[in-house]
Image 1 (cartoon, rainbow, N blue to C red):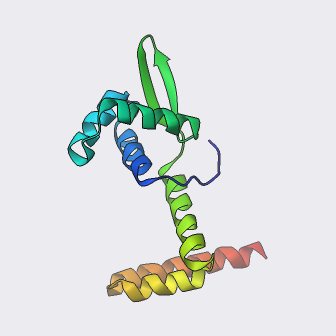
Image 2: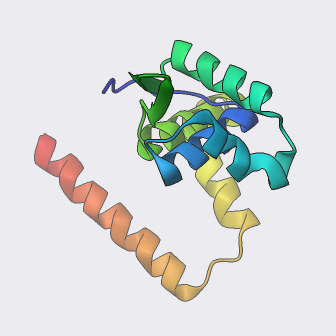
Length: 131
């Protein structure tokens, strides 16, 4: 699996989340899972899934007349792509202003703050070990 970060559209997020939940799965299963949320027809979902295959987001396996879809990217890759896009577009690639914005705009409980501090300390140890 490629390590590149993929940026998904809102519609692609809906589809890939359904695929992650049901994989391997056929397009009708995905269409059924999204029918109540979006009201998309089978042909719309199938077209979008085929385009996602072309983009390297999904992969297929044919079993006689059945085409099964699997994700070609992990949830981590998709999330990383989304966060990196936001970082680049909204904060000109600067991480500190983005983190400050998140800290200021969200009510964090004491436990959240402790977890963040723990993660920062852990990251510092890893960074020092690389020098």
